Amino acid sequence: YIRHSSMPLYTPEPDICHELLGHVPMFADPDFADFSQEIGLASLGATDEDIVKLATCYWHSVEFGLLRDKEGSTVVKAYGAGLLSSFGEMEYSCREQHFAVDKTPTWGSTPPTGP
Image 1: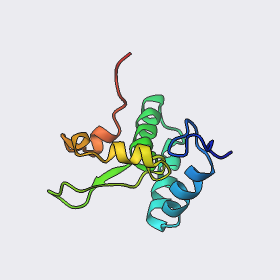
Image 2: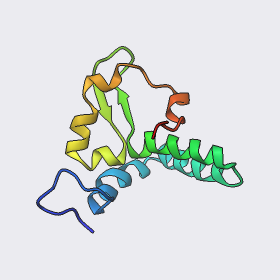
Image 3: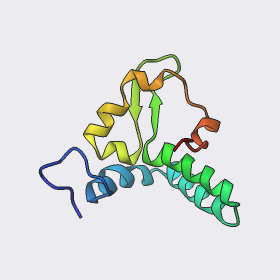
Image 4: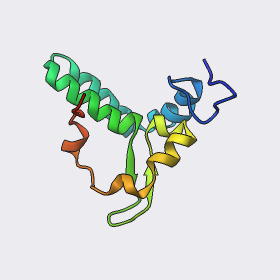
């Protein structure tokens, strides 16, 4: 599957651009590949609550990870596959207002609440 030419900046589901531009470069890094494998291994025998935390951590890192260039910097960089494969998502997510509150590892594993 490849995104439709009428919407090249966004697709509602993962496509070959997402896989090749987003995941392949990250998994070529041994540390990142190990991180992903560790999340998978941690899920074996985990409680439902812990599975939700692991999935949320994966979502906020592997899929939609953002980070600051360095401590105190206003430069925001995308590293998540969902952002790297979508210019529209990346441009929106890297805006400074999304970093009004610095994120912590605990925040990254806390699922959103609401309706």
